[in-house]
Length: 319
Ligand code: PBG
Image (cartoon, rainbow, N blue to C red; front, side):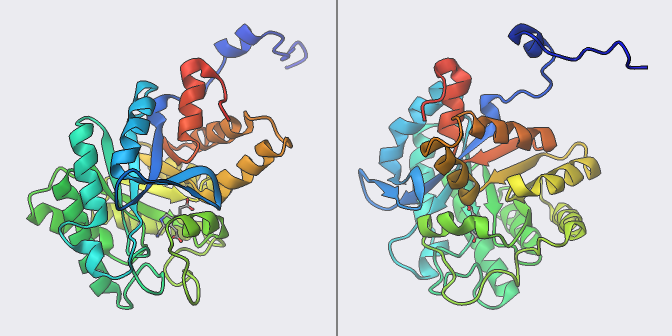
């Protein structure tokens, strides 16, 4: 039947005409580590070209990226001092950053990370008790919504936190602030560089009691079902590259669900190192981003966002 099939794509324009998967600027969500103070832009040793910013200092950077099509950011507050008091106080670090950025960028989609791991002394995402943790997370989410967050993204993996956060948001008049839930978040060693960036390395043990076991793909569907039932509007699969099967399975199960994949710190740094040492061409990052979308993700949280936006706006790979 295929005897006459000659599939060589001999020229670029033919290849372009048959291209199925396209990345666009609005696919990207740029994760930003925010610190207190003014005029701060500090390198993070574990992540090349990724910084901790004070809110004022990141404004010009966001302006530049918006000119290239940036629509969305994800904020991680990295407090100077540990302590739960800072996590959910009405004027917590992330909330103050949201206010500043909301004022500067009325149309920007500002997503906030809702998790305690940068605030707890032991670096865990909980305070011991599951349900007590959910209450603090709910306060944190409400503070972010009040400051002007477009979406809140709980990344802690406590049981029932989506339901508790949803109820708190509704009670405080934030019915229209959706929850982007990290539904399928696996206990992964790919988070190593992030933990240095967000100062949240567990001081003892690991996160395997709450993050998922990567041996169990079916459990990811179960977690996703539960989070949707509790009121999640969008779900996150994390990490992305070694979990493309989970992205695809979630897409098959929920054809219409907004699915976001988190291209995490270790995945970024791994590819980054290959590019920086000349072992791979700079377009290796683009190839992996296409793969994430091909697997079924609508959008991608990625430290490659500035690079990808530069590429998509026609300036080539700047890094
Ligand atoms: C915190 C959190 C982590 C990441 C996002 N939110 C680390 C962790 O769970 O240990 C990882 C992101 C990355 O590696 O880029 N709960």
